[in-house]
Length: 282
Length: 257
View 1: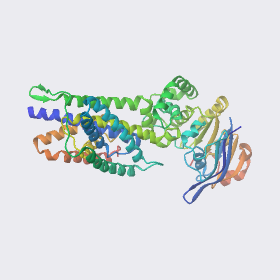
View 2: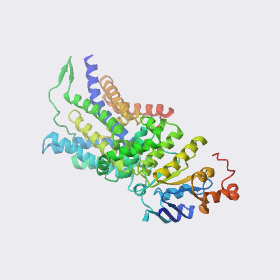
View 3: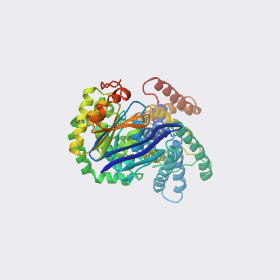
View 4: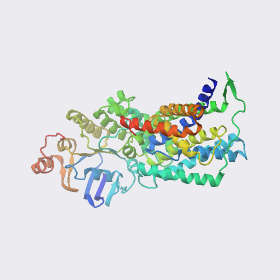
């Protein structure tokens, strides 16, 4: 039973990262109609940058810098994915983001090497709750995921900038007609999503060392979490992330560690198949 | 003074010529209609004037400023707001957010931070304009918290008009006011537009398939056929010409089939 709860705890922590990536994907999709398959790159970038910068400064400062740099990288991806002029179709944008992901892996390999990187967690002491070890890092991840969900929801519902993002997705033509610039809207969404994913990635690195090519599995897991809510709901992406993380850990613990990406892919495909028959089709 | 001046406008989609040398003027405080059968190029004229599509040739000026090929945002800032065909409200956002975005959009530029700060600084002004729009369209006040997608077709048309008015336009360009709406509702909206024009001084450019609506609402009209203006003048003069009824506008019963 202790093993079971231990797996759940670890599952919630990795699930928090899936949730964070999933919510980032939802944000970008809601604002632009683009599925950003390079989203996981920002998690890797966040982790590797924090490691490298952390050699020269405190980890906290390194983490903040890594987040900011990731946001800037996000704006670049936005401009490329949305197209320099005119409107790129969502399909073309998706293919562009896949290309960006491949290119980014090569760049990350050149810049940071292939050694998995890790660094100090927020605390070295684990809490022992009835035999179940809970790393404070897990708690931080879970809190950040919850805060991100709350923050994003409030941002999209209550702030004029967030509402502009929703408006651009709801009726792009009308959004343009009232003066909104669709490319600016895309840039905001990509930048926020990149920063958020970077935070998730840099918080994960202490428990799961980050390598240059980890982005694909992070993206797929995040996408599976996001599809749980039809790519439209922040709240369901959060729940989807947790659920996926827990299920994967249970399979890793009781069946075979090799299966975790297969689980994410299966969950994703089943959800897409199920959703596409209902009214909430992708 | 001429508010909107469209000169020798040509719009092409690939090889197809949709608009073939159309000239059109709307003066300040004027109500003008652009009518004609389906596919005559009415919406193309409007969209070229509003910066949605780039004309192949010709000029668009707003109060003497050349806005040919400018962005929709630039046209909005010059004082021309469009109510798009099919309304296109922001369905998942509350009615009030739809309206406020109309004010935000006018201030929106590539620099999001500065445009947002400008918007927040002019909050009292925006609030006053919102109250004015609510006074003009009282139904919207009652619906303010409801997602715009969950209001009726007529209410959505009001949201779209209110949203355009939040940008404080000098000219309201309306694409297909009557499309898909019940005749009584269209009548009410038309009365509202006349009042808006007379009390607030907002000029109206109405693009519609319904000739009866256009003639009752507007002082002047242009009849467009296959991309060319075939008739223009005072509504009552054009209305009297029987060939207009039969040739271009079908039997004029006001229905939209």
